Length: 83
Image (cartoon, rainbow, N blue to C red):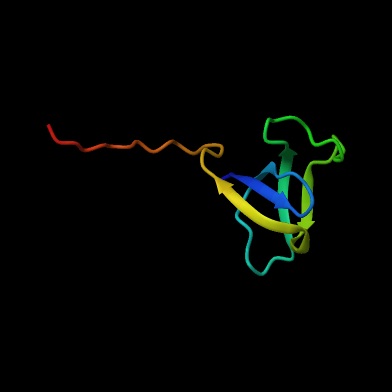
């Protein structure tokens, strides 16, 4: 299952990335692919030929796991109300 991550790096704008699995607390690096700005544009300081990335945890302030990753179906919301 692929996960969509919003990665907050110290001193940089947050960016979106894809990950095959969620990071393990014992990992030294955050491993991801396909980094891009929130609007989908490429990040200027990353080479277009690069395919996978390892970012050391001391550079990361927070990682958000976003809903709607690839292959994930949206949940149906049922609302109850009185007449």
